[in-house]
Amino acid sequence: MEEAGQVKKSFYDASYEPLHEDCMNKVVSLSTSETSVSPNLTFQENVVAVTASGKILKKRRLSLNQPITDVDLETNVSDPEEGIIKPRSVPYTFQRNMRYKYLRIIKQEFTLNDALNQSLVRDTSDQYLRAAPLQNLGDAVKFDMGVYMTSEDSILPVTLRISQTPLFVSAQNEDEPVLLKEMPETPRIITDSESDILFFWETQGNKNYFKSAANPQLFIATKPEHLVHMARGLPSMTDFQIS
Image (cartoon, one colour):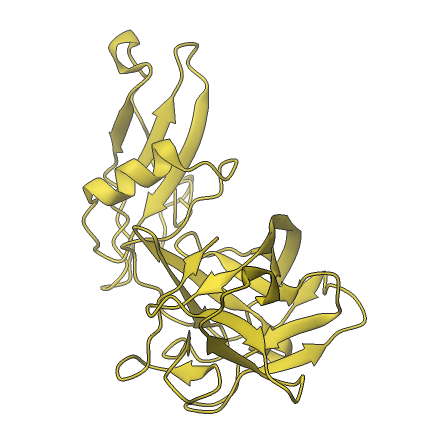
């Protein structure tokens, strides 16, 4: 029972000390004493980057009892994608009944190369993708990446559409080839029932990973003499370079 007159605090209520002048143009960690009632979700810290004028450029909330790493700090300050924060070290626990709202295209007409420096191309059936070594890089499939917004801070949901077409990469079951799914237009809202075309984009250095939103244990992957498919990891290769 709450005492009369007591103000109920929200899950993320926290109080911070004012920023001092010596914090400007630096990454600073704002401590908080607010702790979740859940045993697995402890609100730890907010990380911000501040300009000389005191303007907060980026803010990122880390949770799940995850320590802040140097990679997290570097990501918040140096990310060139107009404030889009790419998840690195914070794990994501998949939740049902999620809604993803379309924001914008963040990359256009880029190619994907696997760990063997093979480019993704369309299969002769036109329904699938495969990886192949190319002498003429103009034959590689070009993709547009659309980003979506969600309430979860540690993920970056994206779609992969073949440029200048209505075809979206669609995740399937483990070891099954990804499909090229035709959509009349870019979905403005994606729910669980349509999450096969949504992927969580993760990066480690120059390696890019695309985890299925429909099944977060599976990644877009390549393997010699196989179509591009969904896999958990080795012997399939799940990392890509974007060019």
